[in-house]
Length: 240
Image (cartoon, rainbow, N blue to C red; front, side, top):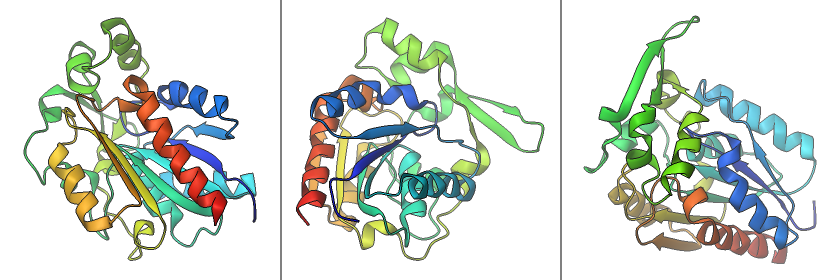
């Protein structure tokens, strides 16, 4: 599958695909083909299977980009998935075998997410959670203007507790064999910056961009930094 890869953007919990709009605009200006998929946020295995179907349907090389819990999904989905040429983690979990988003989020101090969540039961069992809209701005998107943060909060997709507690099933995490890039903020109140730095230290990415003052909503609030990181991944994959 020669040629320039398509960028596939995978949102995480408490967001939807429109959170990628500023990044999509930046990639389009650089003539990079990109799509933002709707992550179901129901279970890690099911979400990864859905993403694999999307990638196979494109029938071309891809760069997978995951935000937050989306990092769990792209790691699970990319295992032995031939079209994938690289992975970009955007304020995202970079899990090893057996690790869950819940486990990783608590590995280092600094997250205030727990006190901002609302939980309620769902019809097929278990609970799902969302961020209290009244707390969304400061929790998720503190470096956005209030009106923009309100829109993100009102369009967020809840996530099941199952998805957040599912461990990575593959014993061959894709970041161990594929080139990866990391971009994240040092003012993230949802995933502690200590975790991002730990993940960088164990995964040896091709490139790392730590953005001063960036929140968890970095793809919306700091799209230039995120877009630049993705473009590096595209250029690297194209040159191979």
